[in-house]
Amino acid sequence: MTEIKNVSVKKAANVYFDGKVTSRSLTLEDGSVQSLGIMLPGEYEFGTDAKEIMEILSGELEVLLPGEDEWRSIKGGESFEVPGSSKFQLKIHSVTDYCCSYIV
Amino acid sequence: MTEIKNVSVKKAANVYFDGKVTSRSLTLEDGSVQSLGIMLPGEYEFGTDAKEIMEILSGELEVLLPGEDEWRSIKGGESFEVPGSSKFQLKIHSVTDYCCSYIV
Image 1 (cartoon, rainbow over the protein chains, first blue to last red):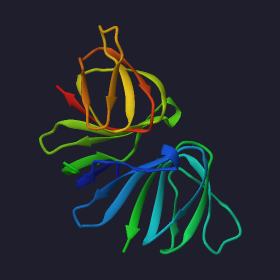
Image 2: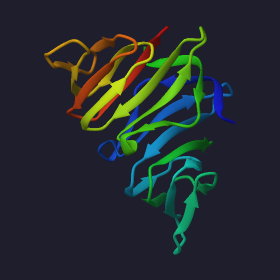
Image 3: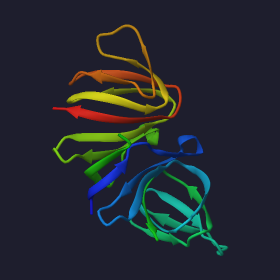
Image 4: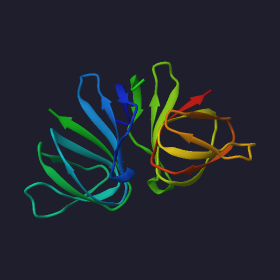
């Protein structure tokens, strides 16, 4: 799906790590929320409130999921899930474009 | 207006200058197109096809518009217009969040 239709977009961006990670929040027709974001090369730690599904549109990264010891390599076209109320670490190897879905 | 309603969002980001400038393309209900973008500190030159209205949501920059000799300082809450089929230069001083409207 190359276009997300009939959404509301929060005009102001979400900006993290001095702009190295930024995103836009979308509210879909069914009330669910997604964010479309960009991560520049670097290492980051994020925390979740709700469970998240991170769909990687393009780019290459490694993720260390909560409770795991092995970093997973992820590239464009792949996705990973993060449980709610947890932290995960990322090593971004190339500019990464993502779509995050929040599962409440 | 903090939210743009009933739009379609192109899922893949527009990425320029190794990710230092990125944006998302929106198609509004009336068919007009806008892009919501982020520019990290740096110096950039852009070209326009259609006339553009650049609304700066937050950040600080200077712009050199076509045909002008003086750089203009622009900050969040302000905007500037760029004629179609022309080039303009930007000096981004802090992470800048913008909304660009294309006037066809």
